[in-house]
Length: 484
Image 1 (tube, one colour):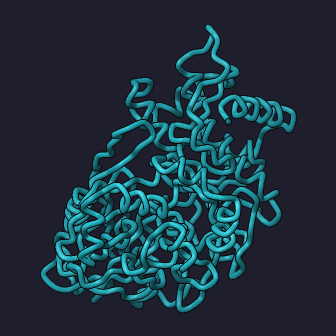
Image 2: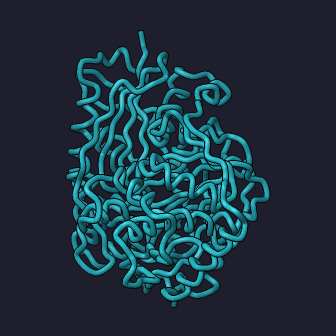
Image 3: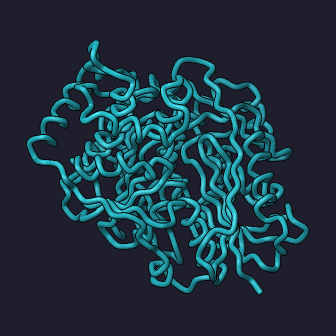
């Protein structure tokens, strides 16, 4: 009787939900609802977690409308990572706006962490001490928000990322949990012990009792009663790791890039923790007691740049960016440095700010739009240059901007690498579907899941070495102008 899997993807600017038909291997319906981001100060980014919960619940119920709970294997959850929330254990209400992963309010604190402690953080967590991750946000909330401190005093404080908040809400406060992938993005989690680390808790002045228990990425977490009958929550995973699973990158050396709000490259490194200078080591997933790791590079601003083009009126719809970029034979010598909220990997410069470099009187709107798209490809190149292509043969792509043919071909040219776009571009939702399917019995193994991946389009490099080098030299000269 069971034939569907429900999945939610709680993102940075929207809450999404999908109803997936297992036999037909496709989504029957996908719904989304946007929510607001707030910018109370320069480089501060917040959102209302209570608003997000209502939006997420609404779209989930919409996609499940007309389907019996008995027909659903279970619910899978994937979510934006690193964003930090403080809520009341008794009421489930967030007591302060959630601090978004993009927020840089704790940059000074992170910059001033001692070299010894920065080394400790890297060794234990695989991460670089940066405001991007959750720990310094938790610290800021405790030290600056009286309501948070009062909740701690009353033993009612919950600190968590969006997944643990949603699980708490879906289970009506019965389950306070996070999976290994989300935990690995907090800067409080030890990659080797797979648990909260006492030294790091002490460094950031966070108590273990405020944090969720840690579970695997594919298991029955609890059940939700938002429908007429209980439905099991069967998977939890951070969005970028979910896209890795959705792209079926289960073997060492397989890589994906998600062109979402930011650009996120993950490379599967198997059961070994590998270190790449200026990139982060992280968890890929934990299934049936086995943990697989990845190396990740994060570009903080990518798809949100297209939103910015819409906001300032340079384009009327996202698809127009491709057309305008193709109207020019080159970038006119213009580069966009996409440091709207600082630069992530491999530069890790919180103070850098965005800039167009190379403007002249002959530059057109088309050049500016092209420069915006090209910046995503150059930023991705900078990440891959650190891997030195030691075992990466191709890149699988997904996310909204992966539909842009100009960008994908340019990405292939700049990387000098084969790019594969799957038929199912909803890779992030698919990861949650696959993992929920594993723990609920819809799928028997990762091998079975791998057979579900289908190619839509392949891009092969067509650029001459000399032209590629000239463009990359121009990009790196432009980057130098905004760095400290």
